[in-house]
Amino acid sequence: MHEMSIAQSIVDIVREEMARYDVKKLEVINLAVGKMSAVVPQHLSFCFSVLIDKTDLEGTRLNIREVPMNYRCQACGHGFEAEQVALACPACGEEAPRLEHGRELSVESIEVADLDAAPPPAQPAEDLGS
Image (cartoon, rainbow, N blue to C red; front, side):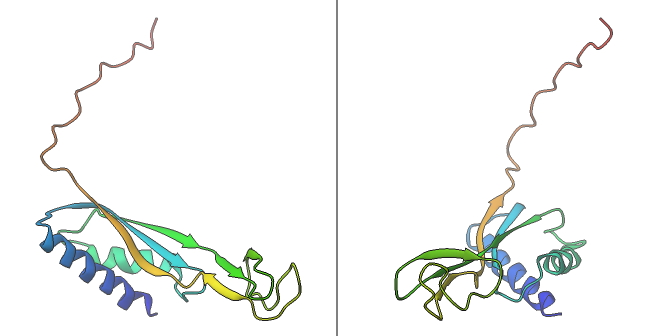
């Protein structure tokens, strides 16, 4: 399962950014994972949770945005999305359209916890007994 090494790389990248900006706590890590990246999102999430257990990153959520396979025909310019590998353009039939999206595997953003923010004011309980 190569997802463990990918999860470790994500942790390393995030820790570098945390050090760079003197961030102490994260809330969310947002990833883009292409359908053709050979990464199983559920396995990656599991591996990530194992790596951050009992660390300063514990509680950080991993949001994974799956990027569909998007192609563009080199002959007619038609762009299209496909669930499976496309061998031909559905518009003109030309073979070997170019895969433009679907191989991504990147940290898109990280969301920092605001530790200095005051907790929200307590809301009065609703009276359900009227």
